[in-house]
Amino acid sequence: MGYPGKNHKSYQTPKRPFEKARIEEETRLVIEYGLRNKREVWKAASHLRRYRRAARDILALLSAGTDRARLDMKKSELINHLQRMGLLGADADIDNVLALKVQQDLERRLQTIVYRKGLARSPKQARQFITHGHIAISGRRVTAPSYRVTRSNEAEISYYQGSPLTDGAHAERTRVTKTGRR
Image (cartoon, rainbow, N blue to C red; front, top):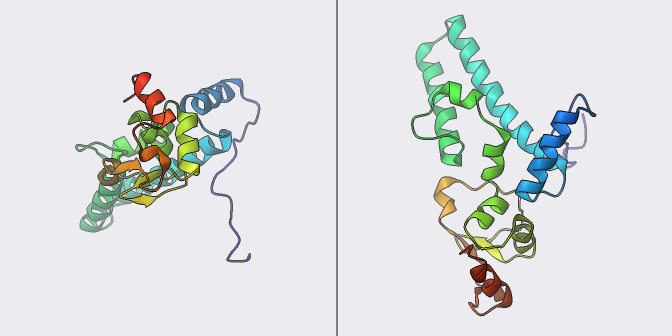
């Protein structure tokens, strides 16, 4: 038993460290989403792995013939949670949970949503704005680029009110507007 205050790894490294196709795919994701390193891709994969494991457990219990009402409740809880997080659509099923991709999880990061909304010119700049405290959700500053944004909070993302970026004449704001991202 370890020290309870110590942080533990929240991801698993790949089993084959030198697989060319995997390395190229991870590099493409790091560039496309402006990630700091491949560890963030591995964290997203581990995040989805937990949901897939829960879906497989539900399917295994269904085939074993256990209490149907309880399993339906677990299934609906899992699907509703994933819909609130924005990973699944409205008419999703347990098979959609098993088909989740890493890109879907990376799309729900605050860094990606700030870039997609046009608050930054690039994913790297979105990361910088977040870490420097220029971005807020519902008026509260968020400084973690990996923050998972729910569907309900997605519309409430804006510049932090104490940030110099709230001024429309700020140099970075005018650059974002000129590049057509806004």
